[in-house]
Image (tube, rainbow, N blue to C red):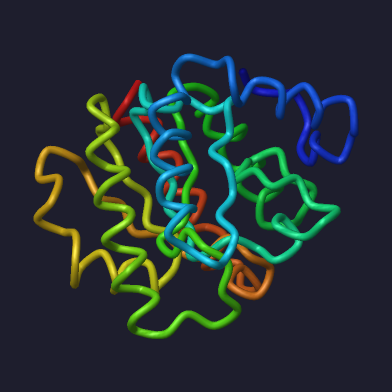
Length: 199
C-alpha cells in the first residue's frame, strides 16, 4: 500500500486504520513479534514497523539514524513510516514517488530506540538489533544507509552480515542534512539506483 500524498498519517482516520493493521497484516507479524521481544528489554520506546510497508517481504530497506521524538511522543504516530507527518518522512516519500519506488520497501533505524544523541554504546546496540531484523528479511536485495553515522555503524558492525545485498550510501533525510542541493541530488540518485536494482 502506498498513499498518493505525503504526511498522510496526520489524518486521524488514516492513522487509526494503519494501527489496526499492526495485528492483522501477515507480512508484518514476524517483525512485530521481534519488536515486542526487543521492547521488553529496553526502557526507551521503540516504534512499530509500518504495516503498509513490505514487512518481511521487503526487497529494499531504508536505514535512518534513530526515531524522531515526535513519532514516539504521546501525540505521535508510534510508527516508523514514510507517511509520518514530518519533514524527514516527507522527503523519503517525495524521493520514492519520484523514482517510482512504491512497493517492496521497509523503513527502519540504525538505533531503533528513542535517544536524543546516540553514543558508541547506543550504536553498537542498534547494530546488533538491526542484525536481528536483517535475518527476518529473506528477500532483501538493497540497503540504503541514510547518513554518515548510519554508514559508519554499518561498516563497523554489519558490512559482512548480508553479503548478498547491494549497499547504497545516501545522505540523511532531515532538513539539515539536505540543506545543500548536492546532498538532495545524492539522495535522489541513491533512491533511483535502488529502484533500478529491484525493477
